[in-house]
Length: 215
Image (cartoon, rainbow, N blue to C red; front, side, top):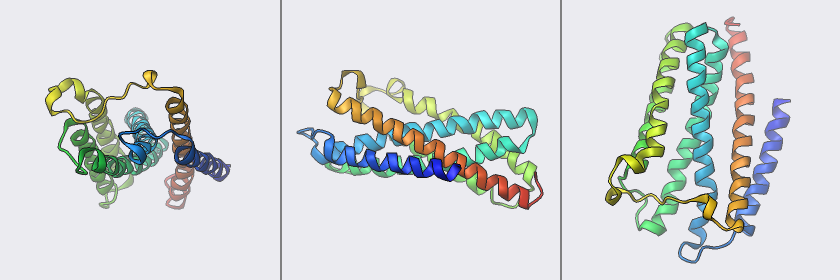
């Protein structure tokens, strides 16, 4: 069942890529670079949603000490980190032709990079040989603390002065339907893929815990 959901999600994603490539309009001052927007923003949304589940799972584990919450946190953290890594890749692809350079040290980029680095440390902690329950406890705490960076990422445009902001602030409700509709479809496609990956990874982690007699 989980595999079927994943295959369906990949089919929807294939349709999304076709839509972005051939059906979305060209923006005169950005041309092909603008199409990264349909990937970059949904990737960020799906990654941050995954980290929200990490935070919820961390709270669940702290209150219950049930390893099923740790599996949810582990799976969601892995997916969130993959998606956030892709955000940090697609951003420079867009920025190179638009800004003339792939990276600018501005608040939203810096805080997103910090989040990625925190989760790199999260996975190091999960693999340093600590016994299972201690790993789950530390991971839950790190996942809860790391989530605090996400509101900072979203509100960075309010926290720092406008002159050091370079990130575009796109108001989607003001976009024409030719841009808004494929964007919403891409958002749905990436969210669907995120959930499919989550269910599939949870199954893998559950089987690993059974093999090691943790379940």
